[in-house]
Amino acid sequence: MNVYTIDKVPMLFDFSETGNIYPTIFYLWNNPKTFPVLVCHYPVLEYLENGADLMLPGVIRSSTFEFPTFRKGAPVAIAFHCTETGTVSGPSAIGCSLMSSDEMIACGFKGKGVQVLHVFRDELWSFGPKGFPPNISVAAWNDYGNETEEDEDEEEYEGDGLGKPLMTEVKEVGKEEPIQEEPMENLLTRCFLAGLRHRFTKNLLPMDVGQFYVQCVLSCVPDGRKLDMKKTRFKKFATFLEEINELGDDWIIKITPNKQKKGVDLVTDINYSNNLFRDFEVSDEQVVDKAPAEKKPFEAPTIAEHFSITEPVLRLFPGFSKGDLLTVKQIKELITKYVNDNKLAAGKSVRLDPILSSISRIQSETALWADLMKALHAKMTPTWHIRWVDGREIVRKISPPKVEFKIENRAGNKKVTLINGLAMFGIDIRTICQQIQTGVATSVTSQWEVPGVEGPQVLVQGNQIHFLSDLLINSYGIDKKFIKGMELAVKKKK
Image 1 (cartoon, one colour):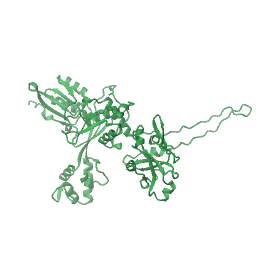
Image 2: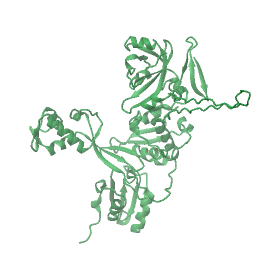
Image 3: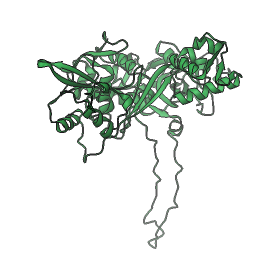
Image 4: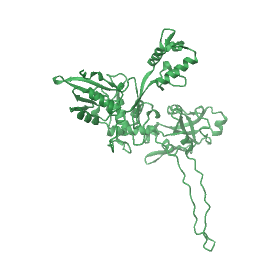
């Protein structure tokens, strides 16, 4: 096989016996419609990565995607449509057609259609700069490469008396190419590597994975961009960490379970000799926090409480999938509709049909609305959606984010106030330490490496919970329900 490279990036390859020149996926990512493209359902990619050829039932046949024309034995590219995100990914595979486009239509799209020669994450991809395929909207995909109609102006001539033209003026209408948005996977990878290099040091180990994502990855997102994990093919940061360890020549980040907290993972080691880390160069990532031009009032993040749909309750929510988030109001409306549709309402109570009975585990034939809703909520996963004013978002399950106060006795029986959880609310530690020091005229320190604590911990001399509560509620807008330990404040004398 002959491979043709440009700036050390493999762009084309050929087999001497076929006579065809095939593009690599790196070429296709820059020129997606140079070759005929078949658009397939996204799950098909996994089969192609495992060595399968393209079976025609996996090709999407609809008016949304135009079916190309090609001969038997022609190079054919393969792209993938993700219905969840509404985007087209790739093309991420290239092969030789085993029948012409007319033959595919005639056979009703049955059987093997393309012999796959090269696919995302194979050895040829590993030989190049790697990376992830671009994702663009369906509309942008369909518009890509369409030429705008040129308005041809008539040539104007000015004679010199001899009948010869002195000047020919031709106006060209510029052709606008659709701007391809950077794949969310590439943005995630860039911010991850930038965070490792410029916002993380080994003295921070071990660090909670969620804290690492907020403090090191999200803080590197370029101005005007938004990193949305749900719009990546990984869906979860943990899945991304597993795959990033397979991209380079060796592992880059080591993740181990936290023995003190069940279900929580820790970053325990970084491999700075990994080639991905060594070769990374900063472009527009925010590797240094910018000082605000003018001091703006703090805006607390919005925290919305949801419940995640689990397998046991899925039957009660038709049209939804496992993992979808619902508010308490939405759950009540959907359950009310279910009860009314099945004529189960009985005043302030609900008659339990077999489905409600098996899910709620309530033994009686009827149940009060409040008891039923409480039982259903217990079968779902409590989830909190946190959104900061700068557009960053994170979903937290099981336990809500909270600022926690603790009182401890130190040497000489002196009391100190410990504050945990400030970072999750986007509160700048240096700023609040200065406010506390000025407000109560006492010593204030902060430290990061505290076992079992998410983010930095602030230590204030004396029991200062009254002042701290007022500061967080009135100045930072933190709701009381997200503050724990207020009852430890010194009781005011009557």
